[in-house]
Length: 138
Length: 138
Length: 138
Image 1 (cartoon, rainbow over the protein chains, first blue to last red):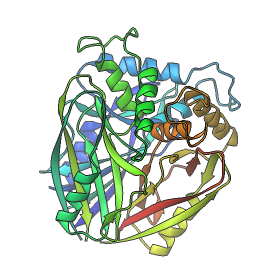
Image 2: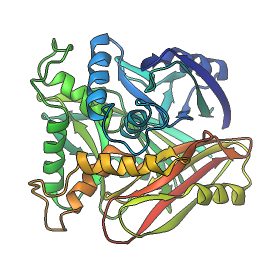
Image 3: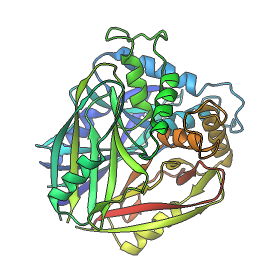
Image 4: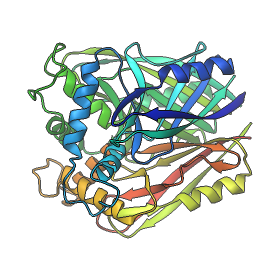
């Protein structure tokens, strides 16, 4: 049994979903691990992680609309000094995931056929986001 | 330290909560592990996982109502080709969990007394769902 | 590779956020582990976990308002025998996290600068809450 860690960076171009599945698969391949557990951790509170359908892009567009409705800009937030999209970003992050762990079976991530792993950027402006990876197994 | 993995299948009979706690406990018992970490991963984006109260079934009924309200059928979704319950299913999955990790202490899952682990089926029709399990410890 | 577990207790004084980040860091320090994975598991269904901003307390106040709106007291819940705040507590727990896993890199939790780990108490009365910790690494 052994482990390896890494910090990866994702440059986001504003609100939306950024597919990191291939980056995770590359990290796993480089570690040459057949069975184990990969943990993906978003180091931010105004961006988050989500596993969602990778087939029809309209799913992601609908999700974006839903979260815009659940966390509207322009509501009367006490926290309003970092821009109208900042408190909604915290709410969207709270309702999704900061961390995901994915089993590794037969040398591959045990994702379903239609599952992609996304960094979910909640701020309107581009950001450099950091994701911590931890892989343990053999 | 050692690890073991398995893919289990759950036949769902439509929208609702399916208790998998006993299945997880069986898997742990078979692995004869005293201390470790069990990871449960749902390989779908229209079903998810949730730990909730296992005592009063009305809690689960109320949760079902809440998620039906948060992700209504009949809203104007762009993704509508897979039936009126499909996009709501993705939203419900996004708001709950794709993955859960539960510590193993003293040979048992460290769940609280009133906690059950549920597969949360979001589609109206029956589905065969796959859950990947990863257990690590000694 | 080795592992260690512990059950910690948090006395809550009613609904709100209780910062457990320092407790987690103490646990890690005591284990003298340089690289690994810390799993934090809330053993309740009317309290949960959340990683959120630790800088401006108004973020947490706004989050409290948002969850009060998403899970209102006084709605017509089937589960109403444990008080008007109990079913809302289950809903709030379902929408946030029961479990978080945080990579350990360079002997420290790989949290971002502005991330704090909070026990999110959803009940109005004080409670004694239990959190199971599992740390694995070397």
